Length: 60
Length: 249
Image 1: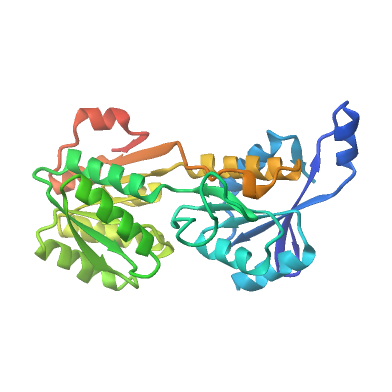
Image 2: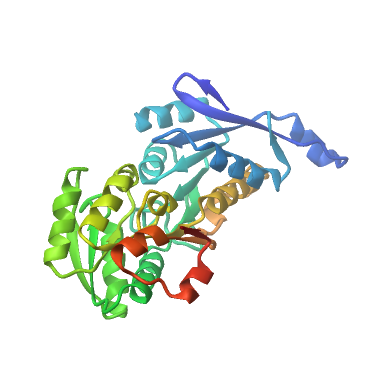
């Protein structure tokens, strides 16, 4: 996660796979904006990333 | 503050927004109708709040995990019924504005279980003493605490006051039982956030949020504080202890 101005953003990228169509997606930078009244607790942030990981996305 | 953060995310035109809690979902809704919003909100009725058109077909740019409020209240009341001898009356503590959907949901659940309900307003930490005193005078042997940041932050104080006034208390927050409250029963937040991650993954792969049905938390955690039960002179049935995810001795 990083801060851009006021916003907190999680950058994710698609893990490379041998499939050409999916590999193309990897080139595209993707950003998830985090919005909440308080900072997200680390355990819940990890759980969120786990869910993203099920679809092939990893942080960075 | 949230609205400024939301506006900044809209300006950056991020690919997805993860909005935590009713205020964040409302702030995201106010700034964009195009950026997909994945919500995790355990306090709103998403249709009544105007976040989505329907549960199966949200229809707009918002989807995510929302709690079935009457279902949770019903289960919490059922737990009190199994725990508190001669339980026929419950006091429900909450903020009349913030917790309006939960007050309504709890009334529905109480009626179904033939339990009399007394609504007691709390707006600030200083209100809990009087609120529990009111509950006690109203012959309520148990209180159900509606969820809010106020309850979460005041959990240790509420737990101590409830023991002092010999009232059984249940909250959605695991931390409430850990802080000395009798029982906690609520959705697993980790599971809810994992599912939000899956929503975001699907959307990044091209799914439309308006076509992804609202999901309800499926895993619930039950935490029982036996020390508090002992202090209240309550005997927790063995069947309940076996169902608990955590028992605090």
